[in-house]
Image (cartoon, rainbow, N blue to C red; front, side):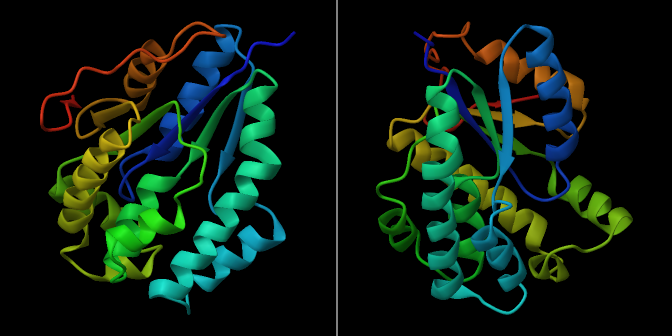
Amino acid sequence: MTDSGLFVSLDGPGAVGKSTTLEELDRLLRSEGRLVFRTCEPTGSSLGQFTRASAAFLSGHALACLVAANRYEHIENELRPMRDAGFTVISDRYLASSLVLQRLDGVAEQYLLDLNREIMLPDLAVILTAEPAVIADRLAKRGVRHRFHHDPDAPSREVGLYAEAAHTLMGMGVQVLVLDSTTTAPKDVARRIADALPPPGGTVAPVPQDDDPTVTP
């Protein structure tokens, strides 16, 4: 009988180093002998591709519903089957991103929570953050890839909303790990995430938290 795997989500503002961290985390976990399945939202399905393309012309409640629909499809077709098959499943973006990006689009948090009421919660939700000025500088160097980033205040707003999302997830019983990538190399961030995971077949131990999510440099 195969031990059930783990589901880890990775979220954060644009330009905090999610992609590079994911590459390092994938390499590290595989070197430890884990079965790793990487995925993302929106997904690569027809619905996911439509959702990604629609973000350019849809907004508000319509886009929030589309994102949630793709998430339920994601859970049914990938997340739950792969986790139950013993894989450590890592998703680039999940619920925390909805609680930030759709709120930036004017959708109330409670509406988003209602839409996502029956989703599969992650065993560990990792939120990467960084100093807003550093994020703004990285965005300027790589170029704008999202309509929100035309707003010069977007980095500060995203960082603040991700902190609120961490609180919300903790209130739902999710283990949350907040890591600051301002001066920390992606390989070191990946190491911190890997250290927070139990051996295959185990369960995630509670991440110590005060009233505010712990931001680990």
